[in-house]
Length: 288
Ligand code: HBI
Ligand code: FE
Image (cartoon, rainbow, N blue to C red; front, side, top):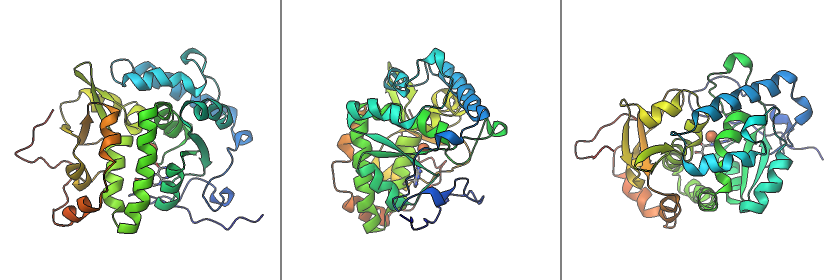
């Protein structure tokens, strides 16, 4: 069946052409994981990234993430190959009814929200090249698998991500995608949670980054604020530098409960309020 060619989506400031081969994607932007395409160098890159990042987690990553990481199918000691999505899905479907699906890279908002609303998480199936070992702008398979997939094994967090997808489709109809994408950015990508009286990371962008994990949890440079729907949705973000503001929750139920309400009145209120820069500091705010 000839798939209609899908238009690649490139987000944010990255003006580079898309990395993935979008001709492989179906109308829903998904494509089978191209496992045969991985070279020995790709497996070695994944192994080195996993090994380095797993060592950094104690005292910095939240308990739920550390507990779920082995669900990627490899105990920490013996990670040597890029995992097969089918193997992970066998466990993930049983755990929370989610599955991961291959995509060639970033995809437009509506297909993205539609996948999340159907408990399918899009995982880019190519991996960075060795000279991008320390930093890559676009999400590659390591960012998506290591960063996003473990917490999909946590039932409360998994329900939040599905609700986020449903909310995204509503936001699209209300023209509020930018505001809602900030909520995604400051929770699912760069969220912090207070545990054991200290800060811990739960956002995938932090957990999959060698440099930002320490910065987000312990640096005195960024400000840390309690997650607040309006404040978070007003705050712009940068895609190619460490965050200057992090938003903090006390538990995942907080995320799930927050998305129970209809956001329409929130979007209406936001229309009357100015956006805020990523490093905006408001006098009356209590930093954590
Ligand atoms: N596409 N593959 C992929 N992965 C993402 O995390 C992603 C995306 N498209 C859009 C997007 N994220 C963000 O704009 C969300 O805030 C919607
Ligand atoms: Fe991501």
